[in-house]
Amino acid sequence: MSLLAVKGLVKRFGGLLATDHLDIEVRPGELHAVIGPNGAGKTTLINLLSGELLPSEGQIVFDGRDVTLWPVHRRTLAGIARSYQISSVFPEFSVLQNVMFAVQAGSGHSFSFWKPVASDTALLEPALAVLEKVGLASRAATPVAELAHGARRQLEIAMTLAMKPKLLLLDEPMAGMSHQESVELTALLLRLKGEYGIVLVEHDMDAIFALADRISVLVYGRPIACGTPQQIRADTGVHAAYLGDGEEVL
Image 1 (cartoon, rainbow, N blue to C red):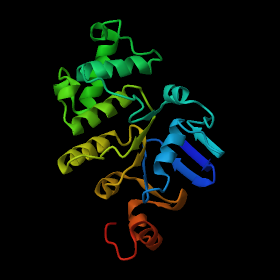
Image 2 (tube, rainbow, N blue to C red):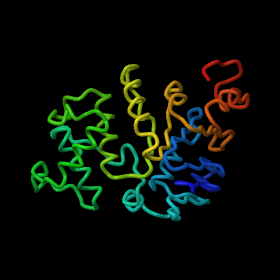
Image 3 (cartoon, rainbow, N blue to C red):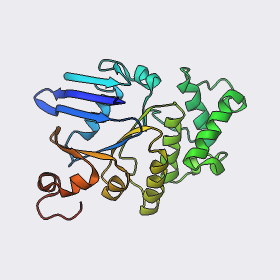
Image 4 (tube, rainbow, N blue to C red):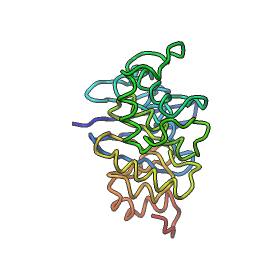
């Protein structure tokens, strides 16, 4: 059974067809990467899956339920989480406190600044467990304002995991990272593979081929190929449409 099944998805913005009858499937525990040139509709797809946009046509089935018209908060509580679903981190609070806020939100409650969240033991244990999972346990007491860019991205993923998702939607998580930060985040995502379904939009092809179980290639919102990394590497149509003839990046 698919964790996520997208069928005939279409999104129009006036006369612009941003998503063109897209089918995509994500199996439980699979990391499914989506690649394509700028303007291919990758972020539009993430927005459609998260509920930030509603489709013009088509169907989105998640965990056996039709969620096509569900709003963001309902999809989040059902188990679909975007890497920046928590719209901001709170730099004046510690790493631990930020994750505790996300644990609280994942239980269906709003952030409660009037209550000393750090003293709530029901939030502390799951927050510490998530920090351990992403490799930030040693930074629990660090103010977020002191974190480097890569560590902030780790924190965003920790806050997403604190929402208890079944499916992670990650839109270019390595953007702006140094090479070493990208290597560290790739290692983290490798650890998360199998435990969560993951849709990954990313331009870092080294990360894509290290991580993906399957890859879908979009051009002008239309899927032109879907397969294993080996199949995508060998697809001459992908080379021509995405990279240009003669490119060796794949």
